[in-house]
Length: 323
Image (cartoon, rainbow, N blue to C red; front, side):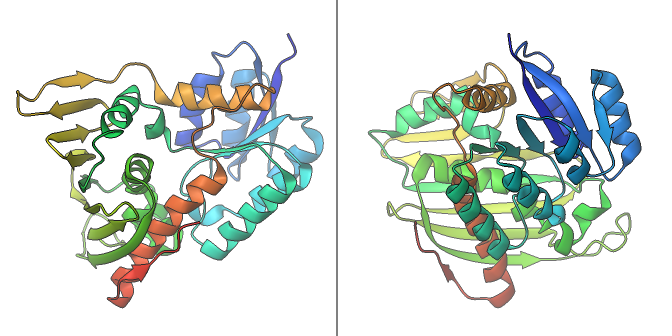
């Protein structure tokens, strides 16, 4: 079997999650690793008998690769994607895709012109519980949504700074925004509010510590999404949806369906990251694409997240043009 040779740009925590999946695939060879922390690239390369590179340009020039995973912090996007596009390689990129909307729009245009296969790591779309929710909502569409990401402050210091992470709505709660879009459709208007309190254990933290957004959807549905990083534990992450005679609650672990006869909970089965990685590799290998979130689709979610930030800063609702 000819194996698909994969290179990684960025070998941090989320990359390790994908590596744990990809190493299970018999049709994949993990062939190259580039990271600004060269020792980290060396460690990954040693683990898989691959080559380590100090930067992505060297890897792309010498790696003989079939596809790329881009797993870098939000502020670092741009140069890596452009280099991969210039090589004509399919790529998987982790969310959020950028902090600069104009750059993301330009990259989306370049990807479309090049006709590249892309995928973005909105893995909630691959939960079997989300598949169930989509089936249930086909004939009874959601009319009200309430989402939440109520959590602790992540340890990487780049996360603490809005100019590096974009803040919680952009870096974490984007998963809930994307899930809402996947289940309900395009967002046409947002109004955001945010607040900040200093935290002694997180010097220099300048992202909002609490934020909320009201959303209007093209379908007529309305919703709200709230976030906080004030806790010292992961409290709750999920999305409630309310339709005619039905209430759903989704987390990344289970689904609750309430139709007035109790509140039964079913746990999710399988690994959504395995599914998204498998679909990307299959598409790269020439099979019919089952990718659920391309770069262009992720951009639609990213516009919403950035619009929430804009609204919170200006105090004005932001209208979004659906495309």
